[in-house]
Amino acid sequence: MTDWIGDCFTSDAGWNHLEELVDIGNRMAGSEGEREAAELTRDALEAAGARNARLETFDIQGWTRGDSAVRAGEADLDCIALPRSPDDAATAPLVDLGYGLPEDFEAADLEGKVAMVRSDIPDYYERYIHRREKYYHAVEHGAAAFVYRNHVEGCLPPTGSVGTEDDPIGEIPAVGVSSEVGARLARRYDGEEIEVRVDADLHEAESQNVHAELGPDTDECVLVTSHVDAHDIAEGALDNGAGTAMVVELANALAGREDELETRVEFVAYGAEEVGLVGSAYHADVADHDAIKAIVNSDGVVGDRTLSLTTHGFDGLESAVEAVADRFDHPIETVPKLGPHSDHWPFVQHGVPGYHVKSTSDEVGRGWGHTFADTLEKLEKRNLREQAILLTELVVDLASDERTVEPREPEAIAADLEEQGLAEGMRITGDWPYDE
Image 1 (spheres, rainbow, N blue to C red):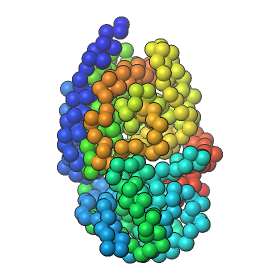
Image 2: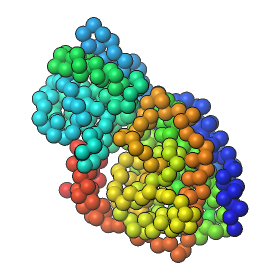
Image 3: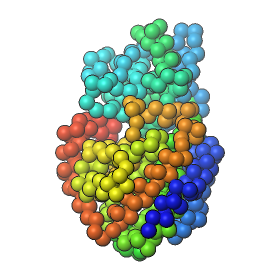
Image 4: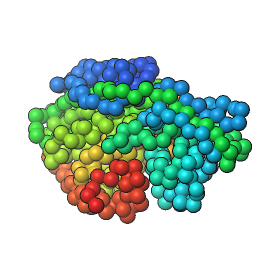
């Protein structure tokens, strides 16, 4: 039967939910907006036909934005604080490190200085360097403050958290500046004294994960996940309203195919992803890893027409995608490397099979993401519907008794992280999960 495809392609369940999420405004981890988004997602999953829709709460480090400033000479330049920056200030000479590659930090004298880095990497470099890795390189080399310069033009200062699991508040004040402000700082003030100031309210807070289920009541399950929180400066349409809309759309489609599910499907929309994968780490700590057959984590979908699934070296995940692509004669990109930067990772790092589901992009980094420009009109309903059809079929395939996905040993994951050049960055950010 293929009637479900037509139903999926004419469904507004996911898109309507996306509109509700972006209309909330601030969905920062621990905020009232994040909780409203979680409650709306719980209700949407229940309306789709999922059972036992519920919220599971947990404590987090709260952080609320105040004012921030970069003062250079007589100029006050536009900036925004990076979440979980400490409430602190520093006045010191600026050092422009360009891309902020590890070797750039090694070559510079940063003791007591303000370090500025770009948000991208050069084409020739072998791996992506995350914002937090650049921040902690600056901390390690004695910097007094950190300036994160967007590479995307348009007067868009970038956001993105600092801090670690053990120390949720970062060690030095950190701000994001636009490409244009960064260019002015590099041109006129490199080597000159500037002031970086962050005002923030640090407090106790609470976040929550959303859970619901479909299919038979088996011990084993397939997790279909996203994160419901977003940064407080924008609508968070792509990151990650679209991912949570996808979870709702998949629940709506799978409810119509529930008789085909041979394994329980659990939908989870995590809280507090943007401040360190806190919600998914909480779930990973209490979940039975052996009972998770596979994870389908949507974070970055809908931005482009073609799906891209990072498969983390799991052969069974690669085979399942190939089967769906062949069945629909539709392109789906697979990336067999590791990707440690979304809610699949607290499970995958221990060998649990998991996808990071995105759409293809020619951008280096996040594009509009983590800026004021992450807004609804940049997304297309067609992309949501087409991708939902493919992911619905993928989940049904993964939930079938015929599909076997073997877990991997954590030692093999650790070895791949070393081989792929990711271990160094994870160690410096405090994210390395393995005993040395």
